[in-house]
Image (cartoon, rainbow, N blue to C red; front, side, top):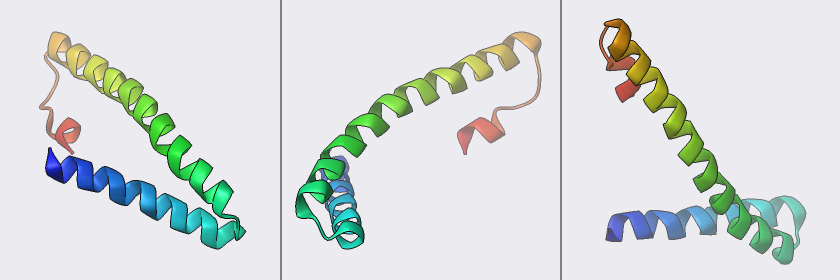
Amino acid sequence: MIKTASFGVMHIVVAFLVVWAMTGDWMIGGAVALVEPLVNTVAYHFHEKVWLRIRDRKGREGGGSDDMLAA
């Protein structure tokens, strides 16, 4: 859990620094650094649902291995 938390903090800091460097505005950098991980988390949820649906469909059809899904 500590590794996950430290990665989350690093993600926010990097997002802030990139946007701040691009815009020169620390408020925009801060806003993006807070909003982007939240949006990305929701997107990841739907991404996982799609991959689970693909895996389930392949399982029902008896088609191939899940090697590509593990990547």
